[in-house]
Length: 284
Image (cartoon, one colour):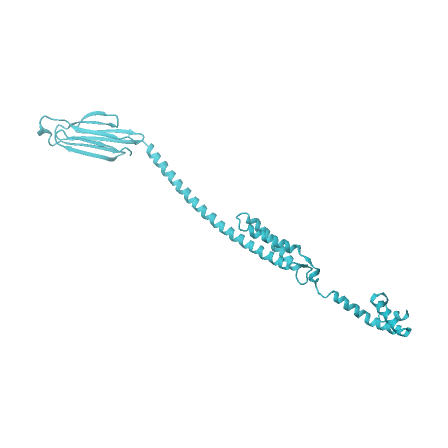
């Protein structure tokens, strides 16, 4: 027992299983106390070294576990799943906003999964983590491009809509102006004249379906008010007939129709018994 206690670093020898195993073999081979002592010293010299080699063998992968002892990284798997979902949804307008959120989460999980499955990590699944990172990054890029395209399309549609609205408004204003113009009261002025001869004449006038008659000397004029501007006014002027052609051969008979002061029709005739007829347009 004193041989065991007297070995190098004597405090650790008696508690080491390898130490006891080596010293038991050494004592049996020598068959004596001296041998046992020498064997004990030898065992003390070689025992710790042998034990150290075994411990280094068990820890041969410095900084991480052997590949066959590692478990799959949950973050790497999650990153891959999120990346696949995000890249599918990134092509759908509006919904791709949600895809962008999933992609950002996928990038974060993929980064952590890559680190955990590296040379100094304790997990496996590095390939899954990289794939998740790539898919998530692509989903973010596609989402940005799709949103930019949708924004341009929306701006173009807004401009077209604004142009159409402006055109419709102009058409409505034009229609309103025409309606106002149609509802405006118009003044129809009828004029007649007879020069030469006796200077006397007869005029028959009025809107379609209605007629009035006046006699006049030299000049005649009549103002009529039309509320709709859709009536046709007719004016027929004839000179007084004389038994003596010499008195009427130089007669000149005229008629005029004016709407709001603008001449719409003018006729004239000469000679005995000259007759002229003027009319206004149906719509004015």
